[in-house]
Amino acid sequence: MNPEGITQNPASAEPDIKALLAGVKTIAVVGISPKEESASNKVAKYLIDHGFHVIGVNPSRSEILGVKCYPDLKSIPEHVDLVDIFRRVDAIPPIVDEAIEIGAGAVWMQLGLEHEESAQKARKAGLDVVMNKCTKIEHTRYFGGPTL
Image 1 (cartoon, rainbow, N blue to C red):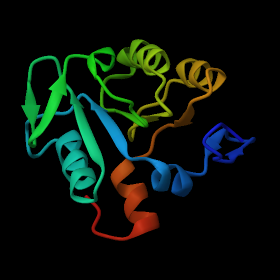
Image 2 (image 1 turned 180 degrees about the vertical axis):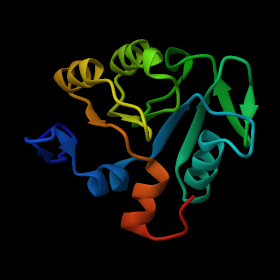
Image 3 (image 1 turned 90 degrees about the vertical axis):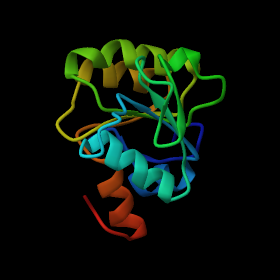
């Protein structure tokens, strides 16, 4: 069990997703887009509408969906429970390094995103890791509501 009390499945090293989402309050959405049709925008809006405190990470915007955006994780002046990644696979290692540096509780690589080396590094640092899943779909699965 990690410090947050979330049991991990040793075979997949994936945390109990329901417990993880139930325990998260602040989510940094890395790669949030101002385009309403983008997955990152739809997911961030869903998370906001479901009571999560969402912080945007987009170096070219100061605000998206009414939430403040920062250029990177290190610039966020508050604790981040979960880092939700919407970036290319080759951008994942430095994002995970920043997540570890800021003491985030978990990293979540969205659908289609997996980076095993970064996942192992994050787990070794005590973070929970979810890969190739959508926070919106998983939240809907466990807590109800419409999907994408």
